[in-house]
Structures are given as structure tokens and as C-alpha cells.
Image 1 (cartoon, one colour):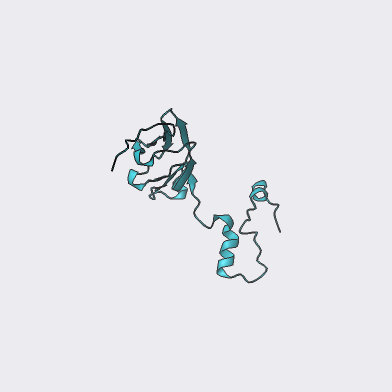
Image 2 (cartoon, rainbow, N blue to C red):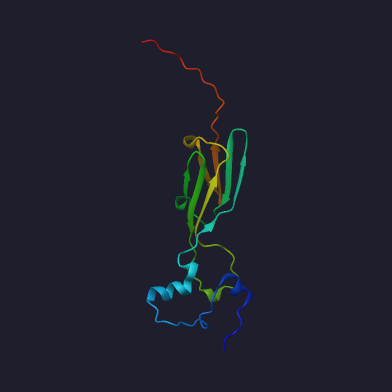
Length: 152
């Protein structure tokens, strides 16, 4: 007897394992991929960020509570910032011990395109009490510098 699929199952394409019928002899890899679908690889979380600018710099703030500063990877180019890391879960509890779970555990990343070019060499990152703050000085394209002409 086949039960009607729930709204969630129809929306996501999920299949109940007890209802799954295999019509041909599956290979181990095809059986795994048919059950896991898009969830074969560990999914990466996306950081939430605040990005604002002052006349001289772009500032990015994000919460990285529970992540050691040495476990953060911040990559900066002149026009984007990438923040990666991993929040490790305390494995002393098992799933049945939880009453409610909302915290995200695992790998995360975020690529933030910047509205203006920045000075990569003068940029700084500071983590304090779980808040990561990136200060990215803007490149002043309108700044004039006079060069001294040397005679030879």
C-alpha cells in the first residue's frame, strides 16, 4: 500500500526510504546517490554579514562565535573578501538528548563583493568576543602625488 506523499516531499522531491521501490539491481554507488540526492556532500553554511562604508574604508562585521581565530581563513582581493571557517560541535551529546537544536555546526563561508577597490596591504581583521571585524581602507583614485624628476 502506497501512502500519499506529504507537501514537503512533493516540494523537495524527497523520497521515504520505506516507500522507495528499486526496479533494477542497483550498484552500491547508484543506490547511495539515489537516496542522498543533493545531500551527498557536506553542505556549507553561509555567514550573515553587515557591510558598510565610511569615506575612507569599507567595514565588514560577522559573528563567528565558537570559532578560534586560527580556524578562520580570510582571503582579500582588491574587489572581494572571502571568509571561511568551521564551527566544531561538542560531540558529547547524542541526537536523542537534545530537546531543541538551532545552532549551525560545520563549515561555513561567504564571498562579499566590494563596491570599491581596497588597499589589501593595509587591511586588518580583528576578532573580539565572537565578532569578526574587517577594516578595509579604500584606494583613493583621485589622490594626486607629485613625482620629483631626477636628472641623470
